[in-house]
Length: 501
Image (cartoon, one colour):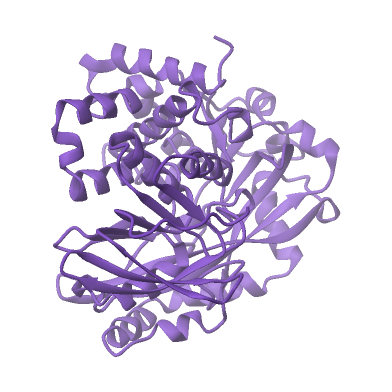
């Protein structure tokens, strides 16, 4: 992308061009067209780190197939499905906003960023089969998951995903399937939204510009930016700053000096995928299949066998495999990122998390040093007939888990996504990892409600928000709103070309 000329003293500065930044910037501009918004991206193109299609699972996380969203069965054998219902509702807001952007002509070609794909959960062993049956019973009772099907029949499961059953030994197996799942290229949707923003009056998206410093002012922030093309340092002022810089967020939060950054640390976890190189195998699989969590693995490392659409072509990925790293960014990070983030105010926190999470550190080192044979042994849990010569290993993205003090105790690692905001509501920063990309609209709506409440308090603001996200003020989880949800959901799917309707 050719860098746009930054605008002078904008109302809002947004750091980073990933999916979170893109949705927040566009939501704000549609809510208040007079806002001046400046987006800065350090790289030469947009959304090249965590949002890049090859650097994440690309799953439209709606709770359909991800077993990690449901705890183990209760004493009576039932499964608590509250979390999956919540995740589904949040992802629905993302779908509706993207559908609005397509319907309004802001972005085009939805199949370049979202495609329909069945979502399957697959388990083996009688204990897990019983668990999946109880999970299905709890989920299919809710109107979100009414169409989910469950089977223990090997032939049926083989019809859904042939690779799962090929050469599989006799054992109890079970799977659930739902056809309403999606594969999302979060990088593509972020780029499309930001290119629209760059064309709007009072807005600019400047690539090759790295924000290097933030200094508090009585009425906002002094922002220092380095133009990576010319080497020139620029200065600007903004009333509000959003730091959505992925692994670069912690460094800028520390620079800001806000009290909420004290004691805050980061723990990077690298990722790797096995990608299929055999076109015949790729053609035979058409699903996203999530399985049981591996022992000692972080939440983001639950294995899955995924059909993807990347660079306009069908692909098949297996993973992710975690890896030890000290870099905070995949493409533009440095091995000094982790040691450079250690400060006097967070040293005790980091030491305690290291001491209390030795099994996790050992797991990451083991993952990063394992052989292809070891990785294929994991794949054989999903695809018993897989051959090493049909797969190759690639590096994926890096997620920096937030480490902070909670209730006076240091060393709490957060595997979700968290937004830190100062009391003046003049700066918010995004920390954490999956499933943030999928529920990005829900997360940035909270930023808008918290930091720009005036935009939602007027009749005009509420009407604009309802146009963008029809369900945003309706509790679609409740049975009395099932018909409203189904109508809004079907409309969004039609706009995104996810159905033939």
